[in-house]
Length: 65
Length: 127
Image (tube, rainbow over all chains, first blue to last red; front, side, top):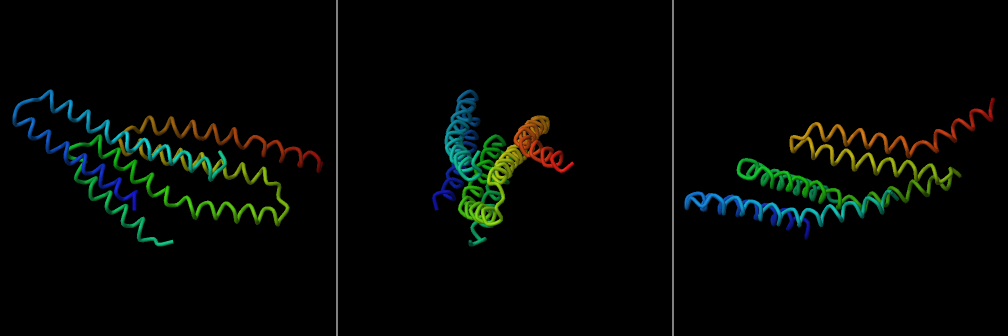
């Protein structure tokens, strides 16, 4: 079930990023934490964009847009 | 078509979303987008069968297929607009959602113009 894995992947990235941010905040490396948030968002965005591309392709095919 | 799959995906997404909303709200928006898209991708199969049956029925009833294609196009645009507008609202962007819906309405009207012209012609021909 590749789709459900994707939800797990995104949630995993999110949780990992939030934990690592807490660790970085403890080590008062604030700017690294911001960078890490950016990396997390970019990784998840890449995953979601592939999904959206599939969505638009299928909608175009089904509805003949 | 096992309904449990959608049920499971949504519950899973909601569980993770409630967790992500506090810590990383931007990722939560992306996760809700992903869940919405996954559910729709699972609906593609049955949707295609529906479209085929409607086309078959239209062919039986000698309805011009062009109008049916226009109906499907309008449905596609309406679905996509609604899908994206709701995502904008979830992310808190009410203004963007309204603008997108207006754009969707304009596109749908544009698609419906041939049908209006056809109706007018038949009405005028009758008079």
